[in-house]
Length: 165
Image (cartoon, rainbow, N blue to C red):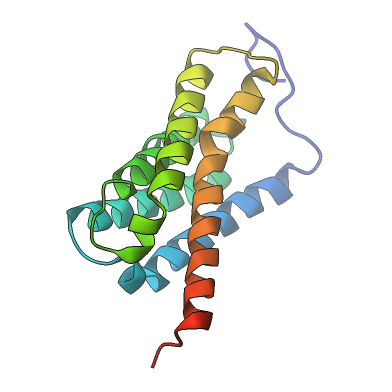
């Protein structure tokens, strides 16, 4: 049980697997950003996108290392990194003019960044729109994972058409 004012179960029997998954997502997200550095290009928006996405990756690692039932404040800090930096990174990416990858993803960046930002606002306001507050938390964090998956698929497609030499 967690939070006696609004008692609710927060840990399933699988919570160690979930925490390990958070850490793995953070490590893989950081690795992906570092490996895609040249594809993300240069310029202020591209640089800010990289740093914000790396901060969100750190948030995932911290969220897995500091579960809410063990360290609520540490978990909250981790969530803030994911919520704020991840969604801001997508919105900043939409402003990038130079890198072809980010320019091609402008629409997806705006849509997913805005969706995540609305999810953050509704989650913090504890608004339940029929999917529960936990569901709203997923709306706040999942757009970033969709965005990096889309970026990875675009990079793979581009590489098949034009092999790097």
